Image (cartoon, rainbow, N blue to C red; front, side, top):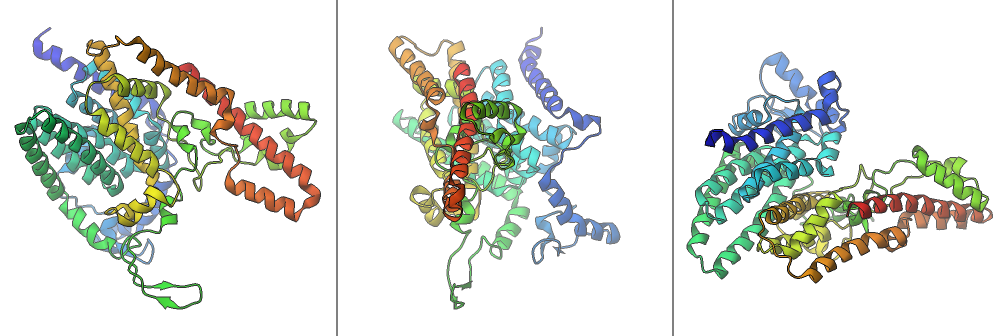
Length: 518
C-alpha cells in the first residue's frame, strides 16, 4: 500500500464508520418516517408567517408577530445567509438527513479533537462513537434542539485546535481553532458557545502554566497570538448574527428590567439584568441527581408512570403478596412518576457511560499529562453549577459572573463533562497501548479498582445511601394529604412505602449493571 493511502486509511474508515452508525441509529428516516421533535414543530409555527410573506412577496420580512408580542424575523429565519461558514457546515454533513448529519458531525468533531491530541486514529474512532451516543446528544436531537446539538458538535474540534496550538503546532492549531470556533458560533446556540469559553479558559490557562513552569516562553507567545487571531476571525465571520442578537437581547427578559410590580401593587424601579434565579435553575439537578451520569435511574431517568414498566409491576405484585396489599392494581400508584429528582420534569438522564467513567478515573490517577488538572477543576465546577441550590456557587455566578444569568437550564454545563470524560479515557487508553504509562505501584492499581467497585457495590447493597426515593415536594404532599384526610393515613403511608420500593428496585437494577460493567 502506498504511504499516503496508508495514512488516509483510518480517516476514510472513520468517515464511513460514522456515516454507517449515524444512519443505522436514525434508519427510519430513510424509510419515509420522521422524528416527532417538539421544538421543530414549534419552530415551524414560529416561522410560518415569515415563510408566507416570502412566498407572496419574494423577500424576507424584518418582523414577525408569530412569537411573543412580535420580534425581529432574523432571530427565527432568513433566506439570505451570507455567512460562508454555512456552506462549510453543509459540506461536512454531506447532504445527510438533518439528525443523521448532526450526529455524524458530533462523532467527526470528536475524531478531529482526538487527532489534535495525537491519539491513535483507530482508537479515536471507537471513542468518537461512544462520545456521539452520549445521551445529551441523543436526548436533544430527539426533542428537536437542533441548533444546540449542532453547536455541541463543534465544541470538541475547536478545543482540539487550541490544544494543538499550545503543543507545538501554533499555526495549524490556530487555523483549526478558528474554523471550528466559527462553525460553533454560526450554529447559533450562544449558551453552548459560552460553555466552550469555559473549556478554552481552563484548558488554555492550564497549558499556559505548563509552558511557563517548563520555561518555554516562546511556546506561550506564538500559540496565544494564533488563538487570539483565530478567535477574532471567527467572531468577525459571524458578526452579522452576533451584533443584531446582542442589540435585541437588551429588549428581552435577558436585558435590564426597568419596572417591576410589588405584591402591594406599587411600582418600583429596579436595575436587575438577566433571568430570575428560579427560572435559571428550574431544570437543574437536585441532591444526589449527579449519580444519573453513571446510574441512569438514580432519580428515575425519564419519569414514566410506574404502570408502564411490566417488570416493575411484577416486582410490586410480589411485594404486595408479602405485605398483603394491592398496589399492583392501584391506579393512583400506577400513575405515579418514576422520576423524583430536582428538575421541573425530565426527558431522560444525562448518562455518560460507566466504562468511559472507569477509564476516566484511571486516567486521572495514572496519566502524566498535565491537562488532567484543569479537567479535574472544571469537572468539579461543572457538577457544582449543575445543582438547583440557589445559594453558594450558583448565587455567585448568577449575580456576579459575566453573562452567566443570560441562560436558563444551567445544568447544560455538564456538556463539558460529556467531552472531558471520553477525552481523559482516550488519553489513558492511548498511553496504555503505547506503553507510556507505568503501573509499577500495584497498590495504586488495586486501590483505584477497589474504590470504584466498592462505590457501585454499596449502591447495589445499600441504595438508600443515594437518597430516600421520595422528593421533598412529594413528602410535603403526603403530609398535607394525611392532615386533610386523617382517616386515610394508613393508605397514604403504604402508598409512600410502595413508591419507595418501586424506585429502589429500578435504582438497584441499574446500579447492578453499573457494577458489572465497572
